[in-house]
Image (cartoon, rainbow, N blue to C red; front, side, top):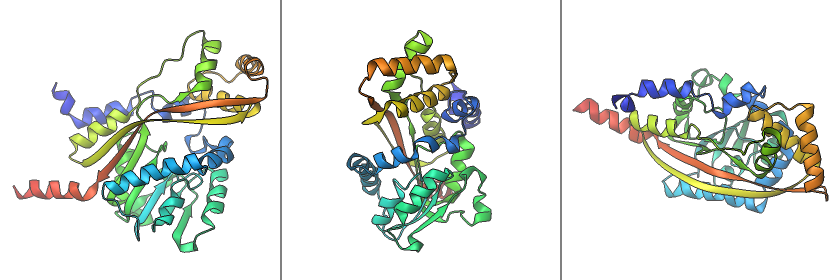
Length: 299
């Protein structure tokens, strides 16, 4: 039972957890930093649709209810994509440093940020993993460090790198269960002869280690979903990418099975997809952490 309260054991377990999103991508030969290249345009359209903007607004509203203020705040948006959060951050008065490594998403980010003065959005077209926060002058440089569904989070060391950059708050969101995708549920039994079984993700490691290390934080787990219409060609590309991410071969056999299914099931050429799952949101309060340690030192 003592192992339950040993942070070192939990850190090592997270590192060795083979089913992390990043590990599964790498095993499938997918570069996590480039995993959205093939659907950058579609992702951007969905992010800035009315439904997408409402989703972003709900998250920012929740942060504000927890005390986060965006007016004149400095925000480091890691994995900024096309600006799905960077744009509303600026609209609420923040100055944003947006880190994004996918070239097509960087181009879309530039287009979406062009409506603001140049000093409002600084785009850093690099992998956050390759950035040294101390050398870049980012240590405790930002009021809020924000990483939403970003593959840079894969162990406790990567969390500490984010925390190093934060002065007041650090927000991390990640899956709290296997992502749900209607195409995976439809195709998986055809390819494997078995139903798709969702798995737990590493959200539990993050929450438990924050607790063990004395951080003050608020957490929220929600169930979210979205519907999209895509062409059969886009569906083929999407499902092959998803199969690779789950460790299945994107070979000629599977491609033929999927193509035949899409032709039978969606003769109109339009595929309606349903995506979603359980997602965890964590807001870490850095000032409270300092107060806790200061209190311990004075005892």
